[in-house]
Image (cartoon, protein in one colour):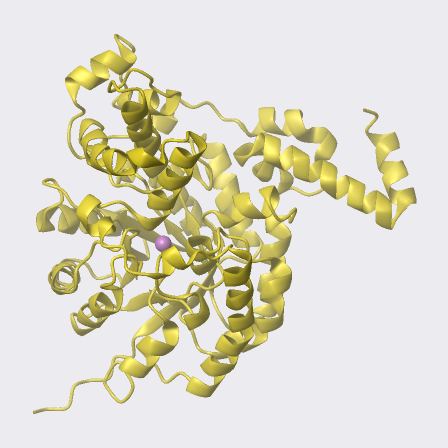
Length: 470
Ligand code: CO
């Protein structure tokens, strides 16, 4: 047999973003990250995912940290490694669509503060919701990776994924990610999908999955053999369960093969040693729930991402209705079908999940309908792959206008208004973006920040108070 040409598999390390978002509610602090940056920087990763997704919200809301400051510190530490972030298309890092000027400014500032690769996705896979972010990343000379939110359903045929991939390439993306947030992509399906994509597009293909259903490392193996270019892994202390396959395991798996990463196993071991006590601590405090570490086959049965399962559990707990768990799980696919069979990923996963809970709790479907469900049915989150259930649409929104254009075309520029609203708190250009995404949470953080500064240097704070009388 002729020797196979070498094609080392590239790895994106997720420990600073998705891994702790998936396992410990995004609670890793900058202080916990910085001491290990030097070693992570020496591994030779394709990139380190360290920003975006829920980290922005969580650092402001729970950790009293400025996410922009975190990014700058990480950038200063990573001298050789590309930094990657996750970006929710027109929803940025929030839960609703924003005006184009906010999206563009956010992309610009993310890149200016140190991001190299922006992974952009849309919860409806409506490519119109990605164009502004992709063009902005192109303009700022960043790497625009467009993610296809992977899901199952009648509409999601191989032809669908191939045509989506072609459109992604045409729209100016630098690479494509298969974003499998629920761990639904089975190993042999991965072979088929990766082969089909490689045959039809020229830009690199990256695969992102979660271990939730237990198949993820087999899926990577088949995807790598089929020619995928990059896989997302997490260092073992925060791998598996609802997180990614373990970096060290994948590295060992491909050793001595044409896909050999060439990574230093000893260095990886030292990095794992650093994170292990953090894992032990999280297990002890309950932050890391052992339930999230096992195989949850329900994710395959109900096609629900792991994060959504834990959200549903806590919503039902708050309502003292934990006994309705299975009824809600069965209601989720029905609601999803009513809403055009959209993928389940932030924010559509929250919208579908909340609606399913309400339908079950009220004993009548769509008796109570949150604004976000109505917005989906009005087309404000974009076009879905299948039509909405007409009856449900009628019951929820009556004769309200349904839009078919790109939703952001109807949102007037917001930046100037936002700047006006938060002027008294602004200390850096980026503050308006934190405020745009989470007005209340950001304001609370700005107040906290000011109080901290007063403690450190009372004269500076006095000067500031003079400048901005309250
Ligand atoms: Co993920």
